[in-house]
Image (cartoon, rainbow, N blue to C red):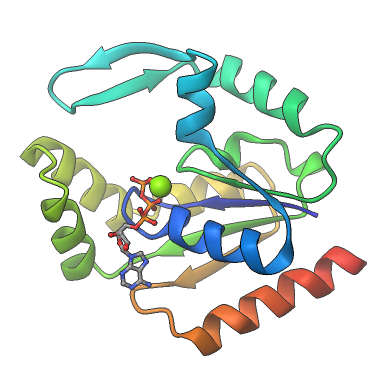
Length: 163
Ligand SMILES: Nc1ncnc2c1ncn2[C@@H]1O[C@H](COP(=O)(O)OP(=O)(O)OP(=O)(O)O)[C@@H](O)[C@H]1O
Ligand SMILES: [Mg+2]
């Protein structure tokens, strides 16, 4: 099954994707790495200290890359741009605001970038976009994520992948 993991920066996508990839034996594709490797960044925002990406091109390249990969985890805050026709599940990770703020501050992000991300989380941006695109969405509050919860998630995805 092709599993998308989306969510505001800092919500733990890479952490959970690595766990699922290791425990399920699925390839893990980081969109950040994909954008770097394929030079898909279209411009650098000094204010937000972040690369802007041309989403149409990214979507095309991602969908072409995963076409022949029936089992893969794709993680990144843009992963939900992949068509629901070729993905089985879109997981949206959520993190409570005080914890998200702490994590983003720890990364030494500029104030504007922290504010933008906290607002995106408050307004459920990734979740609503994923729903609007027609994904089968599983929203998880991963502010704390115990081994028990991780293991439930792994079993759930494993069972879905057998259908
Ligand atoms: N459930 C959790 N409990 C505590 N800390 C966590 C949890 N999940 C992730 N973290 C920590 O939060 C930070 C952000 O996690 P991670 O890098 O996985 O987020 P991300 O969503 O991939 O961010 P980005 O979108 O910027 O790539 C890391 O320091 C990670 O160790
Ligand atoms: Mg990440």
